[in-house]
Amino acid sequence: MTNLKTKSNNKNTSDMRTKVKGMDRKLKLIAVLMSVALLSVMITVDTTFALTAQNSSSWFWTSDTNVAATVTGDVDNDGAVEVVTGGYHNDGTRWNAQLIVWNPLTMVAKRATSWYWTSDTQVSSVAIGDADGDGQSEIITGGSFFDGTRWNAQLIVWNGSTLVAERVTSWFWTNNTYVNSIIVANIPGSSSPSIVTGGAYHDGIRYRSQLIVWNASTLIAWKVQTWHWTSNTEITSVAVANITAGATPSIVTGGTFFDGTRTNSQLITWNSETMAVQAITTWYWFSNTKIASVAVGNYSSGTSLDIVTTGLYNDGLRNNPQLIVWNGTNLSVNSIAGWPVNLDTQTTSVALGDFGLPSKRIVVGGSYWDLTRSVAFVNIWI
Image 1 (cartoon, one colour):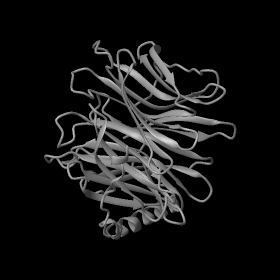
Image 2: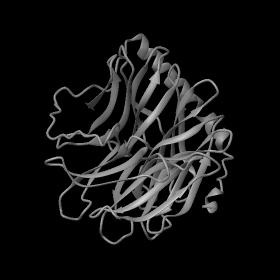
Image 3: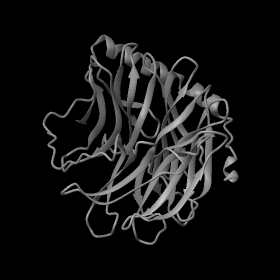
C-alpha cells in the first residue's frame, strides 16, 4: 500500500514541545511531592463499591494463551450483549491470532476462530461497530504478523454473526509495522464509518508513531499522521470523542517517546477533520514513564469531557502504576494517583462507567509481580 507513505507536516512539533515544558515541570514537582508525602493520593479507591466475580472462564489452546483486548456489544444482532476477546495462542510452532465471542451470562464460547499468516500472528486490539453502514455490527481486529522478514500491521473486519472475514488489509512501511489500538468512529469528511488505528513503524533508524483513519467500508486509508520526537515514538492507545462539545470530534492518542535518556509519556488531541494538533503534553516521573491506555468521558461532571490515562512509571527501583485525569480541552491535570508498592506493578487498561451510581467511576486493570508470577488486578476509583 504505497499510497500510505505520504507523511504529514510536523513543523509545529518544536513549538508544541516548548509549550508543554511548564506542564513537565508541574508534573515532576507533583511526582516529588507525592514521593515525599508517601503519595497523598488525590484519587481514592472506592471501598464502598465492591467487585464481585460473577462469571469467569480460563483456557489455553495447546500452550501459552493470552488475551490482549476485550470489548462488549451485540455482535450478532440478537438483542443480547456479547463479550469479545482478542489475543493469541502458541501452537508449539508459532503464535496464532485468536478471536472469541462469549455469552456473558455463562462465559461459554459462542464462536471462535484463530489464524496465522506465514508465521507469528497476534491480535492486539478489538472493536465493535457498524463498519459498513448496513445496520449490522461487525468485529474489527487490529494486530500484526511476521512474514519471515518483518512484522506487518494487519486490520480485519469480521462478520459478527459468523466470524467470517469480510475485509482485510495489511501493510508495512520500510520495516516492522504494528497496530496497537483501534476504534470505530464517525469522522467528518466521510459518509461512512471510519476505523482509526494507532501504532508505529520502523523507518530504518527509529520507530515513528503512525495514526491512520480508514474508510471502514473499503479499508482505504484517507487520513494519515506520522511523527517522532528525538527517537523511538509510538501510539499505544487511541480514542475518539467530542471533547470540546464542538462540531468536530477529537482523536486522542496516548503513547511514548524516548528522549535519549528515558521513555516519556505523550498525550495528544487531534482535530479529526483536519488532523491538526489541538493540545499536547508530555511527562516523566523519575525515569521511564509510559501510557498504556486512554479513556474519555465526563468523569469530573464539568462542561468538557475528561481524558483518563493509565500506565506506569519507574522510580529507579521498580515499576509503579500511574493514573491521571486530564481536562480534555487544555490537558491540564485534574487529579493524579500513583501507588508505589514493594514489587513491580503496572496498569494496562482503563475504562469509565457509572454502574448506576451518582457519579462515574474509573476502572483500571493491570498486574503486579508476587516474586513467583504476574498477578492480575482490577481497581475501581472514585
